[in-house]
Length: 295
Image (cartoon, rainbow, N blue to C red; front, side, top):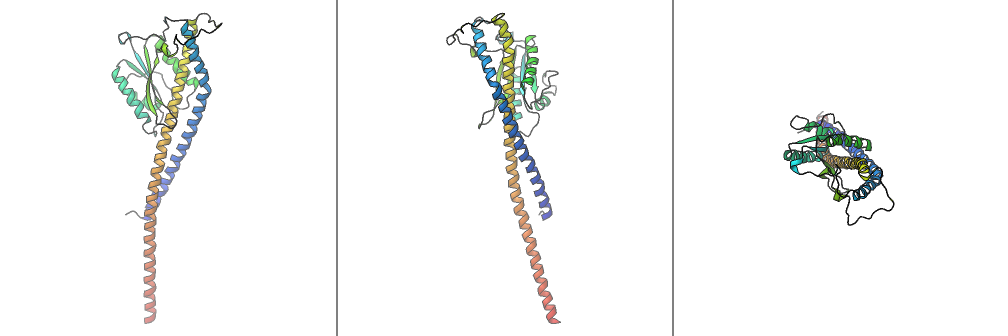
């Protein structure tokens, strides 16, 4: 049986650990709210870009743009996977779910090269068993438009130089008040039907494109891809913080349960010791009185 001093030490240790988990919960909460505010500021711009691409595609019905050319499996020379994980653990199953989805995709396509974002994914896939892009070093923390633009440029360098014909993304979709969902989506090539439907399209009055619609499209698409990458970076970051909040909340609750049991055990031992001391004091007093009477 543990003595009171040992239990007291354990209570103090668990209490200090609970302070850390509570602090990490609050920090993750602040980070998530900040990231959500940032993406809300930029969303209107990228929504407008999507609409503009729809108008451009109206002038290029037989689309030969390299960003929209969908090849069959026989024509694909290589694939790329942008995988988003976190830089640290302590986030429940967040990283494990994304890595498991990536491994499944890599098993299906042995020609795929991994572009890992976050130290967790980089360390996991950097063991030599998988092809990992060189000089691709980006953290998952604090996503920004600038970071998304750099990532987009690295991916397009492979795509435009015909090193890969398809680019997929695995990220964790964030939904307020619902469990996170790991998603695998195609980044390139783009699907024209998602931007343009000739039956619902009206020709914009007085709009002209210089030097031509195809050239304008080439300039707009990278910005659209940047916006999409930024959105999945933020969603994954919010999901990470939400998963960490859940993990820290569970850890805090477990710590509280342990503290409750330890305090009960500590009080029981203390009560037993006090009772024993009172019994010994009473017995001593009685013995002393008997001795005095005999004297």
